[in-house]
Image 1 (cartoon, rainbow, N blue to C red):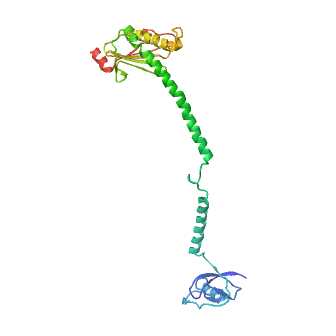
Image 2 (cartoon, rainbow, N blue to C red):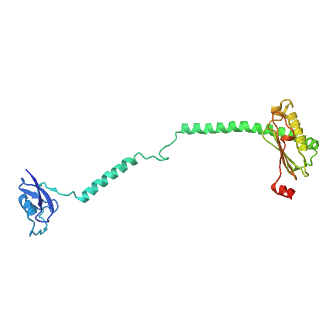
Image 3 (cartoon, one colour):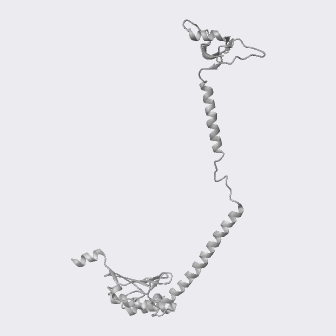
Length: 259
């Protein structure tokens, strides 16, 4: 038994036929004819005409004569490839998850809500008392702020407008920052005097002794805004002097003084 190439005598399609089989069948037009004839047409196709006639319908039990085409049917192959690709895509899609597919258990949600609420309560429980304490101390310092200004000899207003002081500002969690606005030029000695006086007033309010420089001086900052510049002094554990007073003069004023 040998497989040879043949040609359909009806439609001219190229076939692979078994030379040992008496008959062959074209898979394209259903023409049944001798295998030897298909092989012969392939060997000598010159002058052969292919009528391409419709083949009679065969009824009842029909014996199929197996014939292998030389080339795979393009459409059939494309369908198989498409099915394989779609199958892979569907398999991948089965593993796709969206936020809607994952539902958080009620118990986990409740734990998250309770933990968040507890954190907020802790923050509020700490911050509110601290704010109240800081506010109370600030009010105590403000009662004596005039003493600080008088000791320094600076022209700073202590009037309050709309609940806010116009000439000074106390800030910081432990009221370590004081800002003064002078209507006249000031000197470094005046800034140092105001700083010493404020540290004394704050120390009395918080119960700090001048010997405890870590609490009495350290971290306390005084800033004075005056026509002749901005003065800043910050306390430290070793104490302070006029050398610690820094002066910043705007460029416009510096250029005018140079001319």
